[in-house]
Length: 150
Image 1 (cartoon, rainbow, N blue to C red):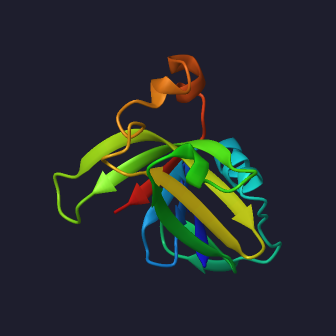
Image 2: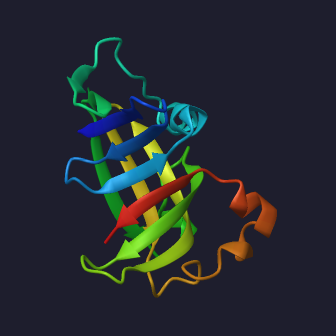
């Protein structure tokens, strides 16, 4: 399950968006609705027209629940990936306590029926610290970012 939260500050209309997986791991956050739209488009998902709304004194929270399973798998070689994967920038977060180790790696996502699988290169893979073996820097920087927890 994926949960999407749109938090709006009532006095300023500043919006912050958060997307969490079923294990309460943050997948994406942004103040930009277009970033959320791109994220959902990439995963072939859409939000319902009827969110659960919580109104507090200073903020309003819209919560959307999407019935889709998310998995993360590691890979050593590109031929282990299924057909029709999309490239994404994985912000891999290692460890549960601060300071987190954060590494940007070239990952892939496969969107199936009711299941989304992220493929992350294993640390021993030639691709883990070397995304530029497959893409130039500008291409890599322009990929949609996802946070993946180990």
